[in-house]
Structure formats: C-alpha cells, structure tokens
Length: 536
Image (cartoon, rainbow, N blue to C red; front, side):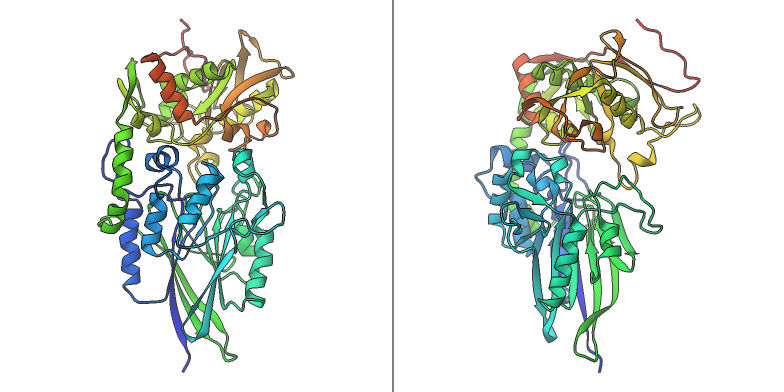
C-alpha cells in the first residue's frame, strides 16, 4: 500500500504588533489581529495532522503597543514574543522592520523566543555566518519524513534602515542564498520536503512573469520559484498582499496580507516513492479569515497588562489645536494642501533648520488631529518609527522626486474621479510613497504623461536651479532612497536627528501647549481644463 502523509503548514506574516482586535485611533473593534488568528491556529492543531507554524517577519513593530514596549517598557517581556511562545511557533523569519528599534531590542526578542529565528542571507560581515545562528530548521515526522524550513529576508534593508541598527551585517541576494542552502538541505541534511519562508514578495506578475515593479532586488519571489530547484512551498510576505491557490513556475505560494488579516495555510500531501524517498504529490494554499472568530483567551490574557499600560500612555494629553487638522478625505489631502501635512513639514523644518521639507500621509486611515491632542493622536497619524535627516541634493533631484510623487495619480482628463495609479496601488497600496513638500512652490499637472508633470517649480520666489545645492529634511527611509526615490540615495547627510518623529512631534506640541492649523498654499495639483485658483 502506498504510504501518504498530510502535513499542514501555517503562516503568519507582517503582524506588525497587531495583537488586539481593536483600532488604536478610536477603540472600535476590528476583525483582524493575532488574538483572532490564534483561535484559527488552535483549531488547525485540533485536526491532529502533522503541523508546522511559521511567522514570516515584521512582527515586533507597527502599533502603539509595539512602540510603547520598545520605547517605554522594554524591560518587560515582549508581548508579541510571549504570544508566539504560547502558540507554539516552530520558527520565525527576520523581517526588515525587526531592525527598526535597533539590534538590542531585536536580540532581546530573539532571546525571549522559545523558537529559532531564521535568515540565511543576513550574515555577519566578519565571518559570513548567519547572524542569528542556523538559517533553517528540520522537523522529523512519522516514517522518518524530514521537512526543512529555510528562512530568507529581503536584502534591500540597507536602503531603508539606519546604519547603526545593522552594523556588522551583510545582506546577500535571496536567490543566491537559496540556491546554496536548498541544495545543502537536500543533499547534506537529507530533507524530503523543503519549505522556504521568505520575508519578501514578488517582483513580477504571478501569471505572466512580466515585471511588476523596478527590479531593485527588494522582492525576489518570482525568481526564487523560477531559478531555485528543489523548493516545495514558498511562504511570502512584505508586500502585504493576499495570495493563495496560486503556483508560480509550479511552486505553490501563499501570502497572508498584514496585521493579522489572514492565516496562511498550505496542505501538503507527501507520498512515499518506490525507492523509499518522499515526494510532495499535492499542495493546496489557502487563506483562513478570522472574521467572526472569537479572540483567543490566553493571548488576550498575555497581552492585557502590556495593553493597559500602552492605553494609559496613549490617553496622555499633549496640547490643544486651534483650527481643523482632521483628515476627512485622504485623497483630498493629497490633492490639496492640508494643515496636518503643512504642520508636520514645518516641525521638520524648524527642528532641523532646513528650508525645504517633505512628508507623506502614510495611509488612508490616519484620522488627523482633534482639538485636544493626545499621544494616541500622534501615533495614529505618524505610524512609523522614522527619524529625520537633512540631505544635500541638487535642484534636479528635487524635480525628479516631484515627478516620482506625481506618478501617484493615474492620468486624469477631468472626467470622473481622480484615481491612484497602478504603480502606487499594485501589488499593494503605497500611499506612504507620495510626498508633499514645504519650502518650495510647485504645480503638478496630472493630465500630462508620467515623468513630465512638474509644471512650475520655484524656491524663494525664483525658479529652482537644477545645478544648485539645496538642503532638504525628510525621514530616514526616504533619505536612503526608500520608495524608489533613488535620486536621494547616497547624498551627503548634513544633519542627523536620531529621535523618532512621534517623539519629536509630541515634544514640539507639549513645549508650545497650543498649535494652530495653517495653510500657505505653496503647491497645487492641476489638470487640463481645471479652473485656475485665485491667489490671495
């Protein structure tokens, strides 16, 4: 009789500190989060099948809970790690956001974990050894079946992360590392099944294979399936996409969104071959929804003391606002200057001394500021642990950056609604990569082709000189070229302000007590046929 085994592989990815099923901005319940995913995990365990449970990275950063732990409560155990320990994870992969709070907090999290952290392609520069130990795990099941899980991480991290957070590390391409280690797992470790858990996404359309983004090496998922022999399953993340029931070059793939929106599941049928070896003969990838599922009581109990402290901190009053800084329509904020964006830019300019600044509305759920501002309002609007840098760029670099931002809008002829272009929405929304500027006067015409939309560009009342030097303040992610702003990459850093923007904003407001919503109308989005705005 042919021997067959069914193995369940479960994946979480890009949890970003989202444990509790609530919105931090307003306390409203939501149908996502690790507490709900935990119930699905326990249900899968109850089926009694052999099971592997892997987190694919970007776990310890992303919510006020995670921020509060990292900045104000780091002596206590990490609540995200406590939850994964409770759920019996087999392994976790290092994500790019694991480095955001520095190596100390990452190593603390790793030390508290009852499971190994994997990343084959991040190595110590001194000896080329994986910086957190073995890059893989092997689990043995009945009938001597050996299943390996290899961890990989997007190697693009040095383009985003502060240098001191990744000092002493080297980042190799995921495909090259996979080719080496998958072969090793098959030939040296005798693995029958090889699962690759890759904190990265797909650089090409899954069906056609055509490029879907600039080929920078940030995402190598398609190439992993195409160029690496011996991968039975590819678990992915980083792009926050929802992918299931899909094969790429014959390899089953899955990606479970972000913030606990889905639990990734791959069901493998493994069949004993006449020569005694095992081979995957069937695989189904799917996404399990936590909607309507009760959150896990044990996970809630673990998180509750951390959450209580974080909520108390979030409700601390900071200052008062005169005027309106609420976000009523995110698209309108990006089409017409908004007091919230102008305020953030002015804070950046005042604290850095730079005369030019840029920033973004990071997502479509930022609520803006109410009259009485609390820490909750700060972290609900500035959701990333960015710091500030002043870099020296040419005028032509500023124009190129404006053209990059102008590509956010699909070409518009005045009919219907203005829409986000596929370049900023596919495969995932990239609202955080559309910048708005202060200190310059500019006009973008979105009826024109992408790349030629800057219609006016002035500094201090004169046309911007393409060859002149200008000091611009921006967050460290953008200053390193993040978001395909390659014109900023490698530019001289004039000033570094190594304090999180959330702290800078809070300190600025507390020092003044009262702030005011203002607009100076220094930029405008136009299109052919749009009525001209009267200048005051």
